[in-house]
Amino acid sequence: MNRLMILLLLIGFSSLAQNGRGERIRAYKTAFITDKLDLSSEEAERFWPVYNKYQDQLEEIRKEERQEISSVVSDLENLSEDEANYLIDKGLEYSKRRVDVQALMVDELRVVISPKKVLKLRRVEESFKREMLNRFRDNKRKKN
Image (cartoon, rainbow, N blue to C red; front, side, top):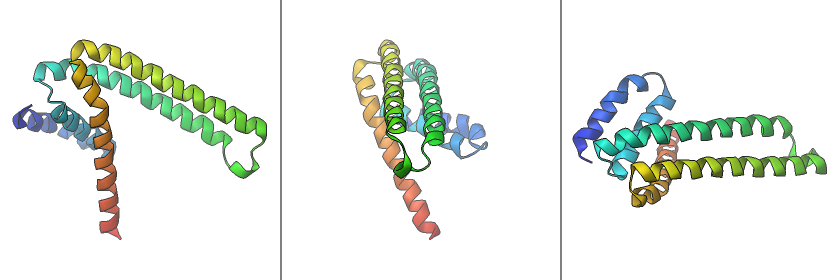
């Protein structure tokens, strides 16, 4: 994808980015993925609604998991065997839900982008996470 399209995406999201760090990260992620997958403007128009829908579902699952598990786990050393088994089962249940959502997303994405780009998406998402972690570490070092 040409650099002009990425610039337009960034400018388009700049107003959203003013709303806080989360929105800035999401805007950067959009530009990053669009660039790395080399999405045409037509592909991007079809890709982002599908991708965002499933990312929102995955985030909701993560929130539920954090709330439920953090409410049970306050001190791992003092957990009963029943509580430990409950947490294991809930963790597996949440993992299954995430995989189910990802499978639905992949099925829909196969229709809007090429299978090669669908495969590449996982690697691009991991690259984005690594880059964000590195930036976070670098910013933390600069503050210290």
